[in-house]
Length: 90
Length: 205
Image 1 (cartoon, one colour):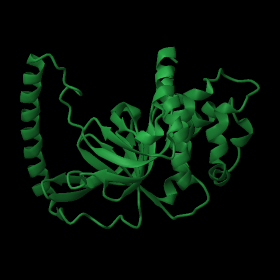
Image 2 (cartoon, one colour):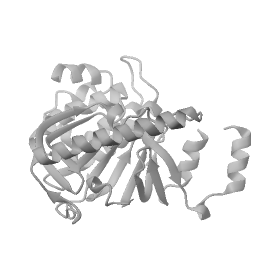
Image 3 (cartoon, chains in turn brown, red):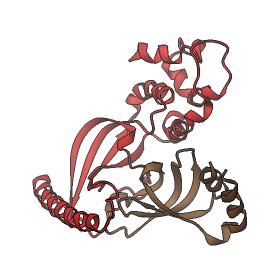
């Protein structure tokens, strides 16, 4: 639940998501659910030349199970709070 | 199909069922939010959080089911090896409307129906379109579901050019086998060092 609540605090921020097949997508995090499925708006695919499939996509739903990394805006992460929450194990 | 969805929603919204399909289209949101609303009797309900995934998708589908803002909406689904590029048109809305209760009840993640599907194959700097028809995609196979920007839809990147299907398919087969061999080699080398391959050699794109 920690990750779920954490990602919820990041809604409407710009994040970069790397999928397990190496595609990296930057977009505005619109919503997230308990499976960590993610909805992104105004997306931009980094390295688009390699993945022309996604050239005309503007928003997407990403299945949580295929996400490898979510790269966060540093300024939006309260590290102290996050550490506390991690220790509490919630 | 019709009977099935009738049974499935019987516990939730019995009075909605006799309504015409037209009305069903206008009230998709109610159906979608059904599980969170308290029900009086009927079969046991799953907790509301079980539906968030389906609910997210329904939120997406609302662009189709809601008031006709657009004649049609394009979607693409990225799945094993190729893109499936679906254009859904109005006549299928009934069928899709019946699909919705299934999504809700089964809590199946990202199950999809696509109509007028075109598979676009990319290989090297070439691509080809293959008409495929209707797709029923099981959620576990879905990598992502993207909404196509209608303004940008026809802007195909200049790096790729259209070619006959056979040519692209041959090239793709070659590319795939080459990549498979490379992956196999890398995995065996990594495994010797104690690393497990991430998706057991399966190529997602």
